Image (cartoon, rainbow, N blue to C red; front, side, top):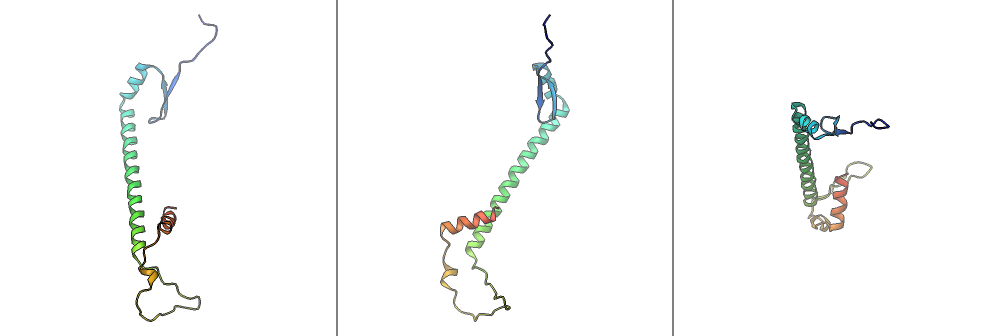
Length: 112
């Protein structure tokens, strides 16, 4: 007989959030339970749904950047009230594409 008491090692199931004995048969029995199977299915579904959500957000940000690069900058009104400019040809700055550094800066602002 041993001189001191030693407990059986435990294994943490992250899907079920419980400890089980760290033996091969206990792990197999636990992984075969409907509770574990349901938790595993839910975990994988959440993982898939979160990935799709991230992809949609990235695509939305790209679309917004493309829209902002194509649209002319909005006209700012003076503090005294709205200003009306006579209709004229578009300015040179509105028709130019933004340089890559400016595009990166705007993209960083959108993703914050």
